[in-house]
Length: 314
Image (tube, rainbow, N blue to C red; front, side):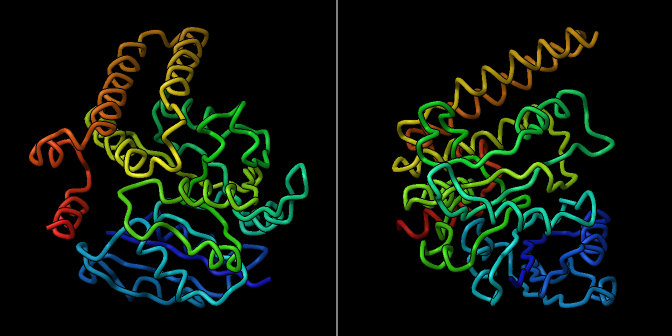
């Protein structure tokens, strides 16, 4: 089985350099590392000359799209397996690719082929307490192979997968016509839902680990959740009958309990403010069609997405 690693990049920093160095140390080496770099001016070609098999394709900010850019990267790939990563996800060890391949080799409870296998995300050293707990909530130690039958018990978490680090079978990816070509967010979950509808399974592989976390401000959480909800509102065929609020409430309750039992109750006001901003952003994003354009641009973290969307409609 040949493997390509595909990475959309924007203003690469030290984390991206560490990511590339860790890819060189993998027990299963990638055949090619396909970089989709946004804005050539931010790319330092001299800094990555020692990376074997790397090829770089440049695009502008106006051309970038969460789904479309990854589809283009997949078009360049000729390997059996494609591993999509973000430019700030650093492999924890040399077994990342090996463990993702093992995840794809699993089958579902009724013999379903695993089409997608995603990695565990670990908090970085500078990760704040609440976000550190959120990582453990979303990425537990227990492995899972999920199919559409899990919707009754897991709800929206059934479709959860993350292109921060996620492996795809290329033949199935082509059969299902890849990611939705234009999306503000959530191209990975939409694809996972499509795969499950087609009878495939999605595997969570906690043995495959990347270091990836963000210390978002309350307003950044607001903007992110607005875009998240927009992606759900734009794809009712996937999300219409699934509620996210219950999972969010469960996270808040368990985080508060964690803070109290670990003598960090002084962080509960921070939790309340951050959770309130997430909820408000989510509710507004779900109703984005009722909002004026100026308010949508203020709420979103992706103004270029809206400009392209409105141009297509005009």
